[in-house]
Amino acid sequence: MSQMSDNESLLNKLLKWLLKPWSKLLFKELLEAVTVTDLLDDIPGGDINLLPISATEKDLEVIVPMWPVSDPRPGRPELLKLLWDEVEVDQGSWEAPVQPGDLILSVPKDKLTDGPHVLRYEVTNANLDTSLSKTLEVLIDLQAPVLGAGQGLLTVVEDPEEIERDGLTERYLRNHDQRLRTQVPGYITPKAGDTVIYYWDTEPFAEMEAGKHELTFEDTIRPVYIDFPGALVLERGDGDRYVYYAIKDRAGNISVFPRPFKLSVSAGLRALPLLSIEQTTGDQENLHLALNDLALPLLIKVPAEAVVYPDETLRVEWGQPGDPGYYSTSTEYQGRSRQFEIPEDKVAAQGATTIQVNYVVSGDKRHDYPSPPVGLTVGSLSRGLPVVQLAGVRNGIFKLSDADERNRVTLGTWKFMAEGQWVDIWVTGTLSNGQEAEPHQVLKNYAIEADDVENGIGARNDVVVLKSYLSTLLLNNPFTVHVNVSFNQGYSWVNFPEMRPQLQS
Image (tube, rainbow, N blue to C red; front, side, top):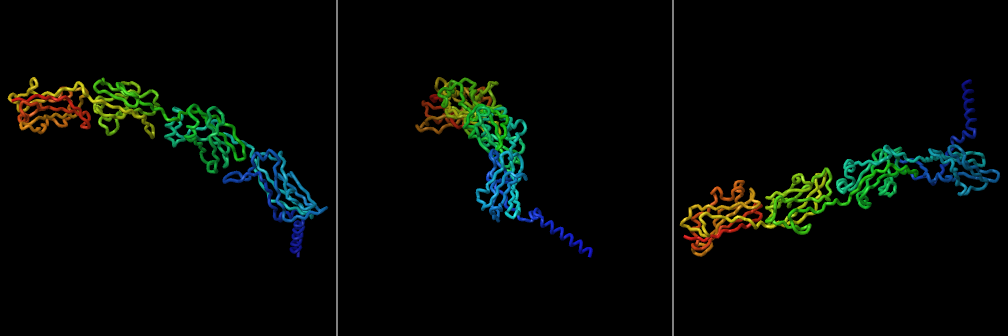
């Protein structure tokens, strides 16, 4: 019995609690939340219900949705209260049907302070029954982004030492995908929707905008890069440039400008003017070299205006790979800056040909930079060539009766003579029947040796014309000893002076 009385007492207490007005509010369905049209659209990873700072410069408009049941009457009004952080900031009261325009309320400007806020409303009907709304959380951010270390100075990501040493060059852009990549120091606190506005100025803080980049959530957890494209660099020209940025958050707060990064720009095509060749004639692009008049050494000069960076090598190319006499060197002549010697055998090998001569800037990580080629026509060697000699010839006459079985042939030395050159010597004449004799080959593609360079061809008595051949030729008629020399292993030949003695018995 006692236990039953206790249960009845507990039930009565519960009923009394449920009959209290405020307790009923806990079990009512909440009314729909208000609408703030000035709120920014949410973005992935960004702040929710963010209010732009422009909306804080005036009273904030709030739209209350019409509640489901409304029946105001004269003497029995309906009451609406708007609460901002649980403080009433606006209200309305009606004794007639509520009109749409009546539902537009506002939060005073002085309440729009930095930080999170909560908006809700209460509706009390004619029966003094109060309904609560769902809340709307509103975020106000009035704090500008705070720049990172070094006063927010941008840093170069790729090969910064090259930028420091040479500035921003055409070579750098060519080697780095036609862009300059910089990194923004970490700042407080990056959020999705922040916009990095970057500048490329001819004067500090001229605010010559170069582009914008809006951060995604993924950007906030990794380094933030700014890429300045080569097209922009070229468009804005060479000279000293000032590179910096500003950060504007999604609410509209903008950071102060960082310390500008100053760099020297020379990004136009690098200057590689035509080389010059000593002892030549002609215009700049087409030159002529007379071998007969050449005094060694032959020097190639690269102009001082040619842009060569400290980590690069300068190389001169005489001809092209595969050409006879092709030669390439990076060794300067006797310490003379930008002057290069072409060896005499390589010069002679190009006789009677036209070649291209240029220089190449190389040694950088990825590319060679060739200069425009100069066309060079090398003349033939025609003066001072030795005349071949045949033992037994006296006063232009060769007598068979005085001849040996093996008659020595000699050829003196000549300008540019060098090991490896080829020599052909042969004899032609007329047979006793009047027909042309088959040529008698004395030497064929003979490669000159070191001893020949010093003493001439045949100094070892190993070059001969056979008497047996000469005996087949028509008497009292001249025969010819021919000499051809190739300075380039048979690619071309130079005719040396012939010997035409008369054959007698």
